[in-house]
Image 1 (cartoon, rainbow, N blue to C red):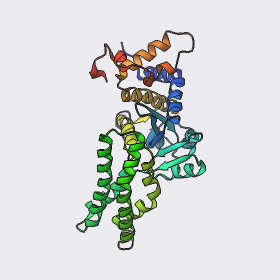
Image 2: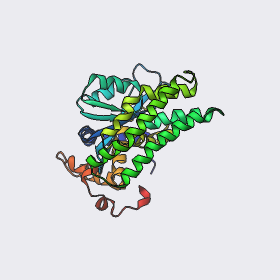
Image 3: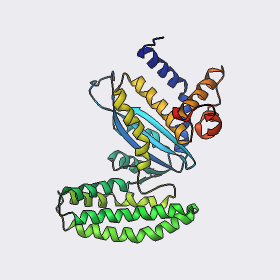
Image 4: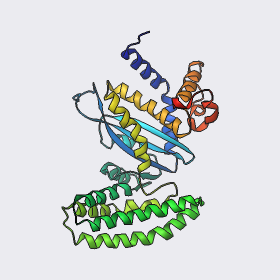
Length: 314
């Protein structure tokens, strides 16, 4: 039987609307967690009011929840302004780890209960680019090695499975001396290199971001970088190469809703097809308001959900 793309798209949007309470509970769970990782990426949406079809919109990602019960939320917004992250974080109290996009710094300045945490992967990337740019790159390579030392300490301590208190204490003991030496090195280099050079820009970026970059030390749940958010945004980026555009704002919202459910299910060890099959069945077989909390992937047993579904479907 041939079913048109338009009909199937309509099904997807109808399903996403029906499951709005479930997506809202994912958002609530992220805001109740000990930390939030955020990132954003472009997306092209057709039919937006007062915008050309060739203009860019954005998909925002928030990752959080408890360490053993991760949650992932995608949200469509027609712009990269602070409007969405401000509304999402307005009542949040805790750490928000991001890249150096200025919107997050402005929001953190507005809400004193938000602690903005930086990303060492972005700082390292700038020094790596400087190291690849020419022959006289020993200073850039040294900076990369110093940052690598921070990661080595992190890996070694994570392997010990310490309590949160002991982990933070031991991490500070080992990392803070390295950070002190690195900062002194950066301040010396700032006076020795051209500000317009790649190395000069890397040094300036790292010093300008120093406070956010070092705040991860206060949180056992955080690592030196925001790579967890970049990993969760990657499936959307890969998918975008296939579907290219969303046909309407409503379609973009539906995509984000289903990506949220699928990615959260997979993060909690579930076969995504099996999880959606279970949710759709539960929602379709009740005339009353379903128990949305019970339908969260974090409140389900992955083994029982996966039973009967081949792993290749994941």
